[in-house]
Length: 626
Image (cartoon, rainbow, N blue to C red; front, side, top):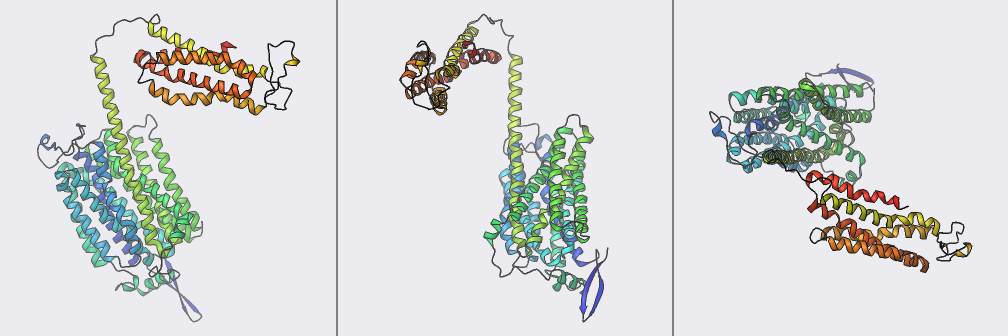
């Protein structure tokens, strides 16, 4: 659709058509598209090549033990890196990138960015060329090389945001930025598409060499074709220059402007945008890094098929990002939705839909096509966020766009950095548990058949029955007051006198009655727990180090003594009754905590549930006392 410019000449208003897609601002978006495609390929290629670089059959996790001798040639060196080391390697790129975002985002709003981006693209390409050698020398040097490459690409990502403050008209921001950012997804797709074939035919090191050479060419083109502002471009038309300048006339330059840090920290929109970017980059990193490994593990496909299928989500995400930009600008230009509603709508779709599709992967019976389809939908729908939170800062604070965008990408990179680490740690724990289960199963298979031993008519079951009755006794002593207090308290007198006996109302003295208020009754009923809670931790610790026979026997005797003293204590006053119940709680807490250590020595692993349930069921038999 043509775009019109409005030029005032006295009382006459001229409508002049402005170049649309065949314009220098779209040419700049396309140049950034290819720059982002190149650096994204350098970043993402490791997610697929690491499948070939790592020996999956050896889980010893030796830091850099080359298994290249197992291959017919040396085109594909293989290393025995554990899942934990792989997680560090995959996330090491973010360690460097995270350093650059805020300072570069701030400085890009104050100084020209042409040399910054061109030099950073060149350095990233050099580190890509050095990657195979660094991997051969050890994982430590490999991690350092990836971190420095991350630092270089962090400069590119943070600095390019300031370009659109000067080049993107208000009604075309979504379209232009989505075109430039979609290069990240196209780069990932092309790398996934071609890396599998390159690894099979030429070896995984060639992936890094080809991408490094391509990046050097992009750096040269950047220095030749890019200009800081429309007014500096020698070939841009006057119509397009005036259109851009008139559209951005309301913006104020951030140069010589102090950063309102306090206002930014108090701004809820800034926090909301930052958290949405964190969620996006956490998910995007997870999909990009572990999709090849997931496909290889779950679907058992070869390297070429893995490359094709791993690239498919990136292709769909690339298309989805461009379509989202077109839709956002269409809704804005036609005033179908407000700008705020558009940003919220696309952010919500970009964060909610991937969660739904990812959880659907857990459904049983998906099969090959169902798994691939859900992975594609999850990765593609994530790109709706590109015209949500990522652009929203340009709407609310264009003069500080570079700095704020650097902050939000920094926070987002924390997500992209920690998600591979978290998954690597989880996979390491899972592999350790699987190895332990396999070892235990192997030991059980090699054990001689078990001899027949006595069952219920045995001493261990006799001990279970003995503890059953011990628990019956102690729990009856605990719970009896819940019922007897109904007879002990005068329910018709609410004066709350501490211990005024009302036994004159009875014919005999077998049921002394006391005028205790509901508050006092509550303290009496809960006083048992005050003592029991003191005993649990120290007795639980000591019972594992010392014999429990005397502990349990003595505590049971003391609890019974305090039960005998309870009526006299009640007659002397509620305070003494409370003390008596607290001491009884300490005694019974000792019984309860110490008896657990008994089953460490007496319960066979295959009978622990049966024996423990017999003894503990005595606690539920206390109601028989009533």
